Image (cartoon, rainbow, N blue to C red; front, top):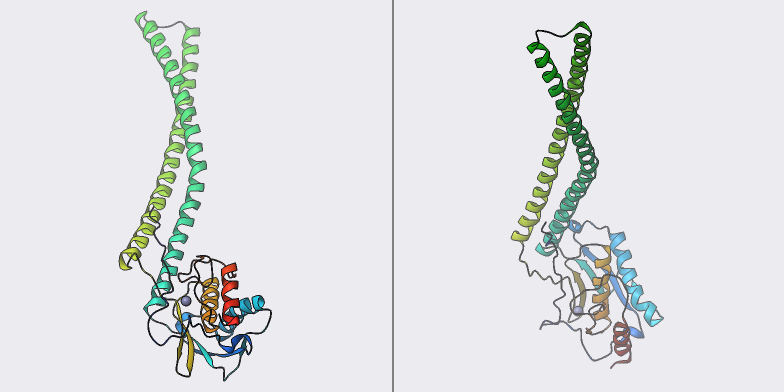
Length: 300
Ligand SMILES: [Zn+2]
């Protein structure tokens, strides 16, 4: 089962241009809070203004908790506009999320089928053992019966008592035949049920593979996204968010860009919020992030 569904994501910041992050001059951020507003949110992200606003507040709160004071203030005339900008980046991400969900649904179904198959297979094996033991005992009895009948026939017939005994034996053999036939049919029924489930199992696995394959083929394997950007151009200041694949990712990206708005530089710890390539999987500052905040606030 191929599971190469990981999209590498990255913040490709530090590009030449009008961006002002990484500046050495301390902005007055740590003295006076940065005012921001929620700007244009493309509805295709599927997040409400309220939820987005809450994500921004939580991301801002991360730095404020470390600084021990208010660093950001939200208002309708805030200086820094925070926008959600939709393009092929988020579109691909949403496709990935959908493919992941579809594949994982199928794999869940595959596992459910497996757990239904196991007891059926156990039952089948036990029944096969009983059947073959019963069949060989039946064959032995039948051979004995046939031999005895042939012997008596050679002698011109059996006496009355022996005849009766053989008739009873023949009846017992017929009963065993019926019981064997019943078991055989039960075995066939079980085999059919097992095959049907196995076909379903294999079909689902195939389809899950196909979906993962076609997604991987349609997407460059070394895909790296710029997830967000802090831009300062003249008097205009804004944060554009381009891509995120869940609530945690959104908060980390927002915290990263808000960090740039504070003048915090990248640092080398890959778990940092301020790592140039975001690898963090939880919304928390590292010691290096804390150092960066201190440096930005003290103007170093
Ligand atoms: Zn950055």
